[in-house]
Length: 191
Image (cartoon, rainbow, N blue to C red; front, side, top):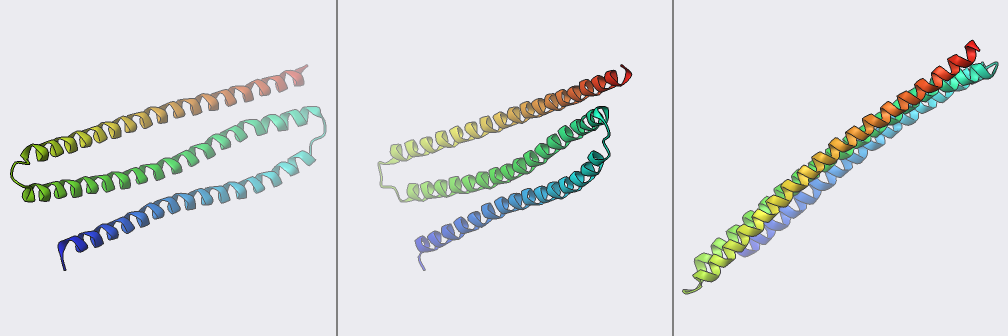
């Protein structure tokens, strides 16, 4: 068997392996999201049952305000926790896919380098300048890809920090709002 068909077969096998790895990563992330949502639905149904029992025991407006206030803070906390879990799952999937992509690109670069080396060995006399230009172009392309990858990683880190800061600010604002409602309810009771 010649080297060319074997290289094609190896390349096809590697492509299929990469596809299976990508699908496995995406499916694992999807499975985690489904699991999280099922847990949230179960917890929500339990909470609705408990809240319904509390609502049935409300006797006046003050009890209703107190019940409403007692639901605001936990609701905000749960929403933030859910968002954090979803973000963590999506980030993990993205990181895994990024690693798979990087390894696939590195393997592709290796194949291109091997092909250029093979071409160089079989190049006709006098084509040294063309081969040197080809190698230089490949080195520049690799350098540009590395720079873009590094910049994308830095941008992702900055975005993650900004998202975390925004989430913390939202959580604090929800807590402050709950405190305002609580103090307003206390003020009505003493009046």
